[in-house]
Image (cartoon, rainbow, N blue to C red):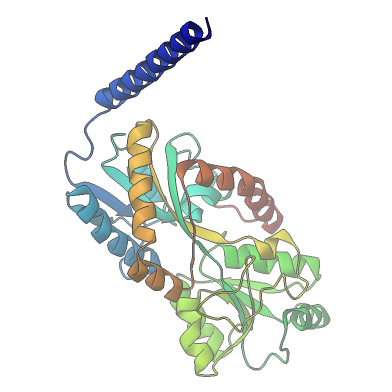
Length: 333
């Protein structure tokens, strides 16, 4: 009797496995061929920046993996809105992607009164490549060596200091506004058209503090033209290992712990198998030693991501960015 029962159980198990395999095979058979033509990787910022450099580096690796050209296209303008909108309205077949910063994929929806796309509805999150912590830097004339000392200094010099940013609503603006508000410092915010002019004004002493990328700040730090007080995020930067995080120094507010990021998104409606394939190839590319070293040198922290992991991070950070933008009072048309 036991022999008959065991034989029947084994037969049912084999039948279930066969059905599962045939179902999976059918699903893949129904999935569209991908890639079937060159892939368009849109960067919604000008050539030469960190996002553009990263896109071309990853584009080269993806082209090898997909056996199709990956064409990097710069569509700059309106804080990443123009290029991102192009992808949001593209055919959802995986052949048009956007590699962008968190502003066009997340924060712009709270900053702009009218946005031509809804980043939550019109885009699918594919892969979070890296976080982008920034360095809190000051002009050498500011007589402080640590972040807590800076808080005391701005509070004691109410209305006398100015901080820079590379755009209204960008992280340097939001973090500076948070510091000014919490310390009742009434600092002046000076927005610039890019990070390079902001850094030049800081070096020249026209502004006293700013949040800057390691890529821009490191040469000036080494030359002694500016001073680093701390970095945002939860970990020290590999490229600036001796600079402690702001959190390490007691600045525990979420404004100092959150970071921007670089990520890839696709038009909503892109088939899940295609999204998963792109994410898998991006993950493989980001594990390559030459890619990892290049990303780290730019001051970014590589993420081991997936569509599901990226989506979870997005939903967790969404209310934080919304609060910071509302607190800053920033609003654009």
